[in-house]
Image 1 (cartoon, one colour):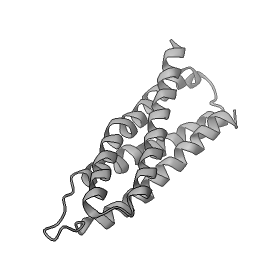
Image 2: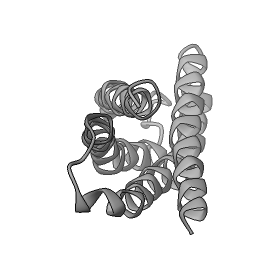
Image 3: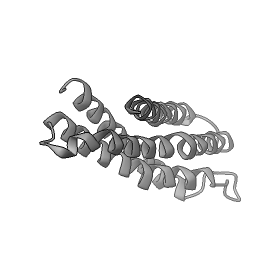
Length: 149
C-alpha cells in the first residue's frame, strides 16, 4: 500500500510543480499580448490552477501525511521534518492564495474601453509573488526529501 501512496505523492507533486511552471511560462509569454488575448491566457491558466496546482498540492499533503504515519512512532528524521514543514507552507500558499487568485483572474473581463481592468495589475503581481513563494517552498521540500535524506 505504501507504493500506491508514494505514487499519489509523486503524481500530486508533478501536477503542482508542472502546473506552476506552465502558469509561469504562459504569464511571461502573455505580457506582450493585446488585452483580450492576455485575459484569454489567464482564463486558461485559471483552469490549470484549479485542476492541477490546487488538487496536486492537496494530494501531496494527504499522501505525505499517510506516508509519514510510520514515523510517528519514533523520533522523526530531520530531512522528513524539513520536507513536511516546507511542503506544508508551500501547499498552504498554493491552495489558499495561488488557486483563488488564479480563479479571480480567470473571471476578469475587459473594461468598457477594451483595456485590462484596474484590478488586473494587482492580481497579477499577487499571483507572481505567491506562486513563486509556493514553488520555492515546494522545491525546498523536494530537496529536503531527496538530497538531505
